Amino acid sequence: MGKLKVAVTLDETILREVDRLVTRKVFANRSRAVETALREKLERLSHTRLARECAALDPVFEQSLAEEGVSEDLAAWPKY
Image 1 (cartoon, rainbow, N blue to C red):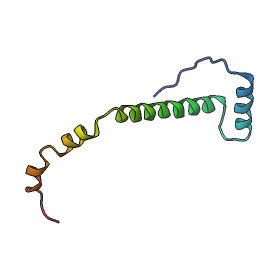
Image 2 (cartoon, rainbow, N blue to C red):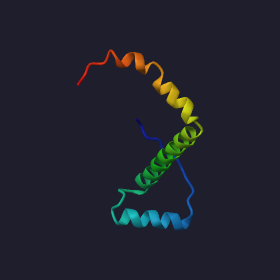
Image 3 (tube, rainbow, N blue to C red):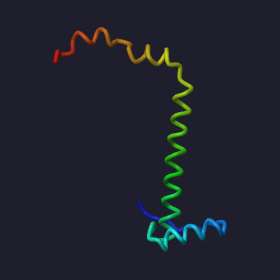
């Protein structure tokens, strides 16, 4: 995937901290630091949404769906 340039405005304190991390070689450069932070935040938001959606499910109904048809199929499964 290609990369595109964007301009962002950051609080001076945040930028100083990013620069310290770059100086300590935690990140290769400012761009890498910002990209990593954004990627991690997007991943966390994605997992949060999944957890929220799962919490809204009815466990009894979901269990009945999971077990639907299992008893008939179970006889056809090989014994181990």
